[in-house]
Length: 386
Image (cartoon, rainbow, N blue to C red; front, side):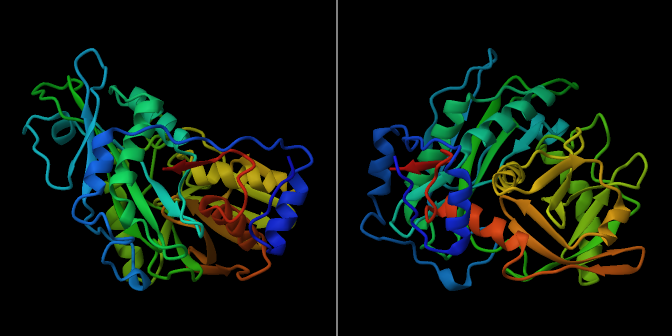
């Protein structure tokens, strides 16, 4: 089957031309059937509205209350019940719940995008499901199956479809949660776990919008330790970096880049995103060695870059290499592919190239095009929700 390019940009044409010779065109992944009551709920109240009453032009990255959330829970044997939708709102927890007492919790982050043709799309949701399963094993938790995870996400999006922003105005950010809801006074794993999904329409993660970021290298406080939980998306990973972030932002920086805990000589990742360095035809990123989260956007960017002919190196990256890079960018579900304009290390500021026509812009254009359906999904990365 011939590839049909929906976008006429040179970036899109170049990308498809480079990979169509050795990538077979697969069929589009079909969205699974959701429970009948989900469509009934969508049809109540706001059923005749195309979009929710939101100022889409001024959408930031803060919680916007949507209509419904999805939840299910496991029993002692580890099997999860058939989940259901309920009105978005507070939840009730036992004071002795595992999440409250011993931090048994995982989060995921993913987005639903609305294409120009009106389709609502998810990007590689099976990878989020697999990452949650990996995290659950590390945290001694029950986890939903990949199918249960994706089904819960789909139901959440369908029930909140009118909260998915118009094309080009943002996305519906989805937050799957897995946490110990069973009670335990002594130090032990919870007997019951809850899987919950909610969403919020969002635009840019950073206050800079699409402008280049200015990062600060933290030399004292590490983000993760070997043998710890840095390689999974544990809830407990994020609280310890909040004070470091607050101080950096008070000084005018966008975010913080952390060093390895052992030597403090190698860069690892930014607070909630992975980092890449570009020099010539080579793209370098720290290897996921147990302290660095295996980002889904990171994985996708690497695959796209290789398709385009770039040399990609996943390895230890010394902090001194920041001085040699021509471009630097961050990747993440919330972040997208964000250009870095400067990094400050030991009071020395290094600046990088930003703008159109660069590697960062090329990769961002392609991945956003795939996510939103303006570039045909020849990799079967996108799941349509209908």
